[in-house]
Length: 205
Image: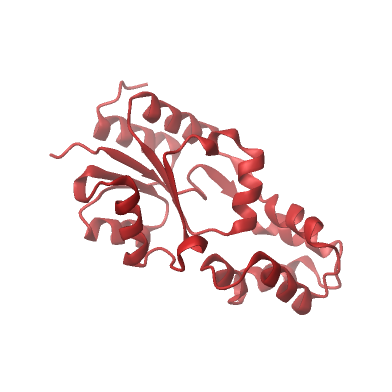
């Protein structure tokens, strides 16, 4: 079997937990809509998806959110509330560090947005320790669109089974398998660790 030569990590639910209910509650404190209403705007309308596809700038996203919800605080307050939805999955962050220590180049491959990444860069030092970042809003496509997987291959200069990919969503894993990548469907840190150790030949913990 071909040994993987690059390891690609999804971000949300793999390295960082996130919960948009946190943002909805914080944003509701400074608007005229309930937290439930704001959650529905974020997750039940095309607004966030358009932002994560790069179809809206951060200013446009903020302005449209304000128009829909009545939120009236400045952009910097919105950014703080919107970004503070993350918490670290420390065992997976440690696993990433061990993969790097073993000499494998690593990459982030995520459907995400500029405000989230800005917050993550400021808050989580581990995020600086990757060889490359493939972020949906920078390219105009979202997983599982094959065009975004082509960007990953171009960045890591690896194809097929030379790529090991870890993601928590089955549809994203299926798209990777169609390209011949080795894959791990992330269900728990312990199960993913065992599969990474087996696939890469790392010392078992």
